[in-house]
Length: 118
Image 1 (spheres, one colour):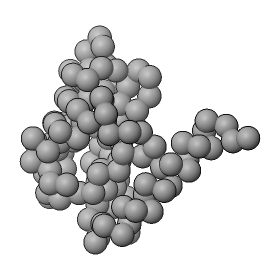
Image 2 (cartoon, rainbow, N blue to C red):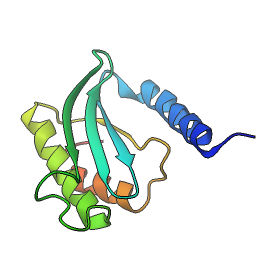
Image 3 (cartoon, rainbow, N blue to C red):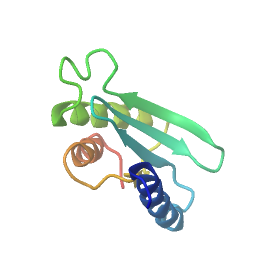
């Protein structure tokens, strides 16, 4: 029987294989969600380089409650700002093994409101 980590890795791999077909050379906005924090990276897979990153651990982003929807929205706005500063306007959204709901959805919507297109 597969354990939880193996199942999550399989779902993330399946999601990324679908994204590669849609990417057309665009960088990917990858999301990692833990119980306490949320992290986002804009990654160029062709070069293997992180172009921009943001997390709820940073000062002024999460506050005391850095694992809630408000903190995820703040991280989404911050990653959109940093991506635009790096010259990126369009990305492919990589939710990993997480469903598009709650904190992941809040981060994605805030990034869209911040000017990223996906």
